[in-house]
Image 1 (cartoon, rainbow, N blue to C red):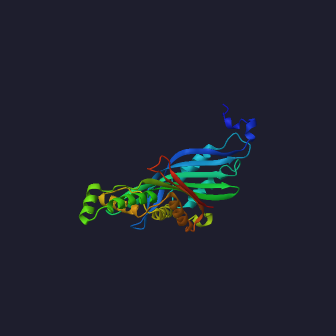
Image 2 (cartoon, one colour):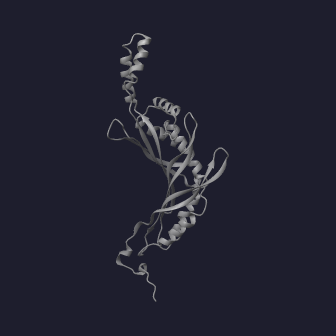
Image 3 (spheres, helix red, strand yellow):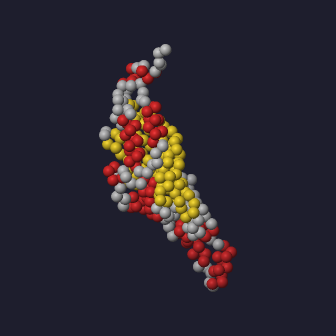
Length: 301
């Protein structure tokens, strides 16, 4: 019996090149290595990764070799992942399996990394999850590496805070004694509160190829996330008790910022990173006063 292979049947369309062809939204378990800060030991965590792997199709052919890509990804999932070089090697391996058809490759790996955090005052430990996307792309014989991630934070509007303070001072100035002031505060509390909202940083960074291959990827990513959170000042919290919520309110009052302020803080923070070739992204303040968002973009390419 003759074997049937539809890919062997040529059509006039086969000469048309395609930018990317491959596998999208493939979910695989990856053994990702993290550092345990308290002990300096390394620990494997099994994380579910969503992977996209593509090659270009530039030579006349009905299609690519999907099974070769799948096999490469399956083999990759068996090895503990520590550094960026392993992802680069995977991308180049996928391209090598298509050297008869392709000149370019793109690999995208989406993870949710659980980082150990502590509450502000009670120092209770908890895990907070951050989305991380690793992108390797080789085009025109140049291999490039990118990381994408998001950070949630709280922002309080400086203008709203000033207006709230003005109302409070106006009312308080009408009281003549300490007893009247204390009674007024007890009865009325805060006459006006500034509007605050959950906000989000979305950023893409381009890594220098030669200097970043051997760095412990998750350790470095965690360190960068912590630096960015420090720059923003008020990252969102997980485990919160009364003392933590009170401290968070104090920090927000001391950390008033427009979206422009947040974008500039991020620009300065990323500008100090020696492993970056460039970066770009945006901050979005999901306004509680308005029905629209306040957004600021930044870039250094």
